[in-house]
Figure 1 (cartoon, rainbow, N blue to C red):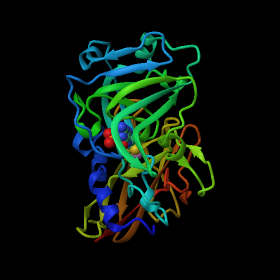
Figure 2 (figure 1 turned 60 degrees about the vertical axis):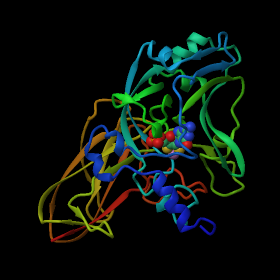
Figure 3 (figure 1 turned 90 degrees about the vertical axis):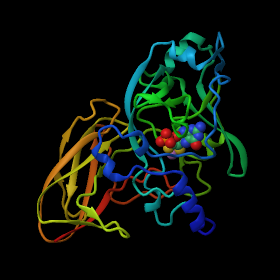
Length: 351
Ligand SMILES: Nc1nc2c(c(=O)[nH]1)N[C@H]1C(S)=C(S)[C@@H](COP(=O)(O)O)O[C@H]1N2
Ligand SMILES: [Mo]
């Protein structure tokens, strides 16, 4: 972490806040508690002159106002979004980027227009391979001046649950969450969900821009091309029980019966099981699952009853999904510090 200073880390951490883990108690994250990740500056958008262009390899290019979008059929999806860098600060050494511990996640009710219906209206050209999403935000990254852009293969873009959202939790998007329009791709890591959308461009080739070909790849070392990050790996988190010590955030709890609670999600398949450990990961017991909120794209709730005896305990939780993906006990280091879904540890003193 030689050229990543304390000031740079604090600067990033204050611009991009996480979801405080006690907010795991809400099925849908209150908007102001949802995490934020903004690479550059938050654009100020004038709705009167804003347009969404749907262009590239299409038969009928579209240029739509915010009212045009609201005039089309609305769809709503409740989905959990997690930053691909969640867990980065738990890597040793920590790659130079947003220093998330475990809090880069949130669940929201997104409302907007189904992307497929707009692509069908524009008419996909014969050679369509990928759909490129362009945001209004500009910056310099990896030495290159750029706008934030990401693409999706056509088949993923055409899925039912993929939206261009203008509302989050029943209100217009806030500036920091992408006003006036963002992409929402349930199941995929956060970077996919391009904010401040200005163009949807149909490409006849794979997009090779910075956020696709350089960032958001799992690379073992600098010479490695790596593999692109797509769907979220499984993760269970616990709302830390008891009360925190102000500086260390270690938990204090009275002896007796406590219900441990949290949420678990995976972008690959539904959650099959959540297990809890009361001894730092030596032994594991099953937690109880419940479907809340009721959406296949949102996290599910879990609970576990614990008779807490006096002493210092290290609590952990881990999830397995129905595709057989498990949380590894040891994190798999990579140059970008992505996808670290090794289990959460919560130190609790019972007295
Ligand atoms: N245009 C644009 N879209 C963006 C980003 C960005 O910096 N610019 N950040 C991405 C990343 S890395 C994440 S994790 C999510 C975060 O969305 P949120 O801030 O609404 O939680 O937005 C994604 N969409
Ligand atoms: Mo992210």
